[in-house]
Length: 246
Image 1 (spheres, one colour):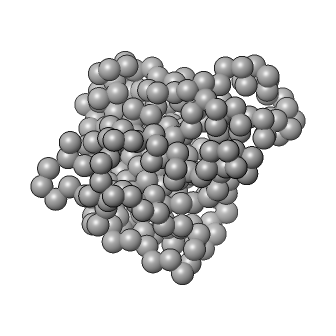
Image 2: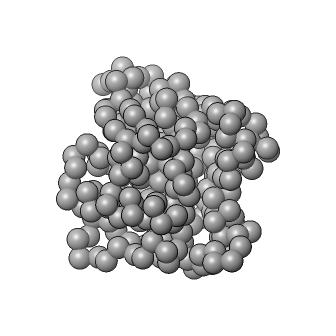
């Protein structure tokens, strides 16, 4: 593909749970390891929370926006700055992959609405139903062709995209989230975490046990079902291959 980017920039929006990070590092590492050789080019990271850090030229790279323990509904100055950048980058056809908080930030940037999910926290290894029309999507199509319209992914979030941007195409749902994935131009958002494997998911479940139990969720059952989710990893690999022109 002429003009395909040769750098993947991870736009960091938060930190991993401390107990997990001590063993497995931060989001940047997980994303790089998950994508692996599907992206044979350069990598770098920019922290969106750092007001002194210049945001990259949208035409200079492909981008992954990470998760965060923060909420898009806080509308902190750094979030509004990032949203303005995402609007401009999307309009310039920059390749973007938003994960969880990144998915929500992208949705709000493009006119969607994020709220605390009235259906409650979604955490653990969950079933993702990919829309029938996603079979022709550049990124999701390859996963549908290999794995079908139902895959598993690891998730941990309390907010949800209640309303998609008017121009968005919904690509997937879960039992607790009607807008689990969407696309606008060359920007994709997924509410789940393709970069989280079974070990990391179990680490999050252990770290958040008190919250999960307090909310009346079956912590032990969720923990026992936590597993690797290679089909979700395949989505990130597909994104890397598509935008890298491979």
